[in-house]
Image (tube, rainbow, N blue to C red; front, side, top):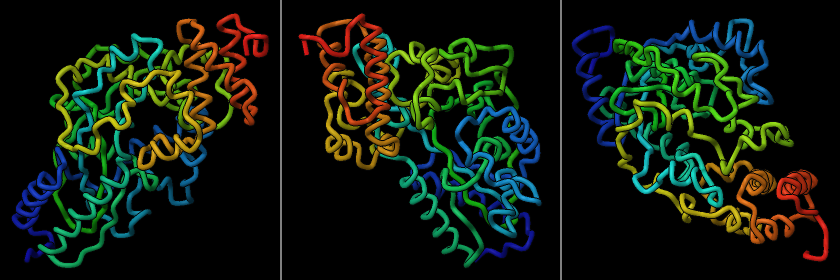
Length: 366
């Protein structure tokens, strides 16, 4: 059993072991950082003050008299001294993003959401890693996170040496690109931090130019209110009409800034079978998905991150994509089939889509 009372040799050995145990559990990289991300706290405050979080009120919900819990891990787990950050790749070989985006009849789903919901999988693996550490050194204080609390994942991962923050605000690594999930273990162990990685974006602005809605308003600054991922996932009401044509055939999330990034050209594939596309979501047509009933949605997307938006927003998103699709009798017929849907939100977006095709909501062809 290790003695973790500031002994550097013990700390270095334990870190090596944690990396090895993490690899055995399917993680592609493990890093270590201290407990503060103070520079990120100031950036978050400016971002919130500008209203860039839109309806995501939870982004501002953790500010206390002692500061923002997102930037101060010790407010989430008193006594936190170190953070263990884990990275797991999700890119699947079978999902051709460029081919799908180029085909207006097909539905594009952000590649992270094609398979099983990563939250439960990563939390389970992180818990197993914490259990393995406990076996080695005895009981210690820790808490596992995977988007389950106000944690500034990118800032902590950057401080852990797992990459740098790209101009699209995502974490980037020279070998792994950005197609990966992050998770953390806050701990009271005194683990020496890894050296941060230097920025390798240089003068490149490919991600900024590639954003369909110009949501990356400046390097390292994203206005969520313009972001397709926000519009299709977080936004509960109607999608602003001016932005609808810009969504194209994207029905859940958007990967354009990642697709444009040179560091993703050789991003490795995932080793995790659970992240492989399910129910043909990487090949499905818009008409096919729009025909799903709510029971189909709930059954086929069980265990998927997509299910959390609910059937109503699922139809809203597909209606917009159908409005942007090449005009055909099949597309117009699909839209008319939902013209009298019980949801006013769905009806409004269907009516907009039909107008895009020069078709009336009701006529003899119904």
